Length: 213
Image (cartoon, rainbow, N blue to C red; front, side, top):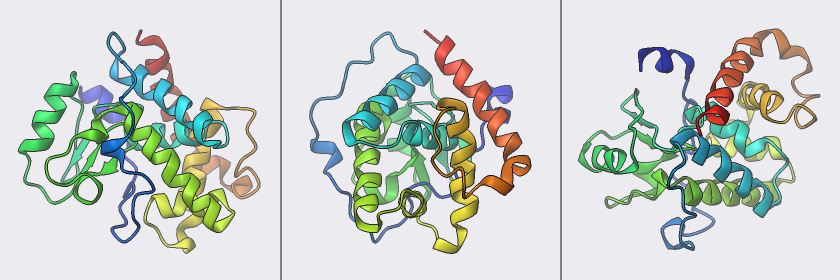
């Protein structure tokens, strides 16, 4: 667990903005895809890929975000800055429901549970629902701004002045999961050296997800 935690750096404030409404009611979406027999990492990876296709996101964008946020772990929890990786969804649900912390990020794409999953809801721990919600959220902001970079900034609840740092960190993960993708390449042309560590971290975690089943 300690070695695993060393590989993973959670996204800074994933989906943290309180003022933006969710584009869909995630708790009311269609039944989750079955993930019995899949490891938490494989389920997160497959769910993110499916959501990308469903919502017409650029290849690798949501997988890159999930890799950046949770290390592609469907049950990942960041509670008051401390990372947890429960083996089962039930264990993760118990932990999520029992915590009184004010800062809780949950699941494959690290949804802000205190903003988007109130009242004891645990849907962010279902990778199929969480990634479908996240892809819809990103798509909504792209349709508003016409810019995937701004969609990423809004996902992080960040200031547009932080765009280069936020976008290029995601770009470093996209280079791992979709090497042929050119998204954000021009914006991040001068950051390759700085992003090398994030890229290598992402490569190691992607290998874990692909080898898990």
